[in-house]
Image (tube, rainbow, N blue to C red; front, side):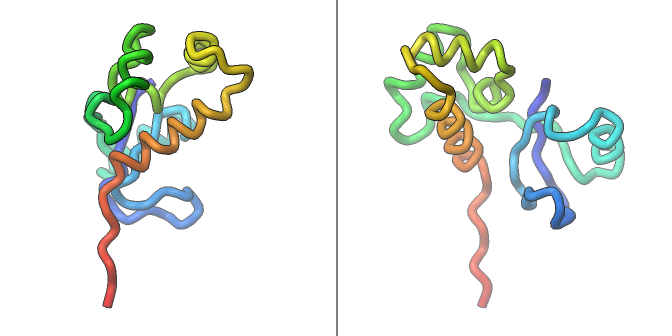
Amino acid sequence: MAVYRWIKRTPSDTGLRKGDVFDSSDFAPGVLDSLIRSGAVTPASTPPLSQLAGWTKRSARLEEIGIVSVGDLIEADSDTLDKIKDHFGYKTRNTIKKWQDEARAAVRPAQKKRG
C-alpha cells in the first residue's frame, strides 16, 4: 500500500477534501490509477510520528514494532493493526483507529475560513 494526497477539488461522494491523505486501499486499483493520471492525487510524503504534538511516548513504542511515520500508521493492514494492539496490550483496535484518524488530521492542511 501507499499513501496519497488529494491535490484537486474532490467529488463530494468520496468523503475526502482537497489536501486529505488516504491510503491506496480506499479505492479500487483502476480508480486510483485513473485519479493519478488525471492529476487529482499524488503520492504523499508523511512526517515521523514523533513530530506530532503529544506523540513522543506513543511514537517511541510504535517505532519498536516498525511504525515510524504517519504513512506507516495510516496504511497499516489488518496484521499490523493486530501487532500494534498486542504490543500496547489492547483488547480491540478502537484506540488504534482513533490514532489513525488523529494522524490523518495532523497531515491535513488547515481549511481556509471564508468570508
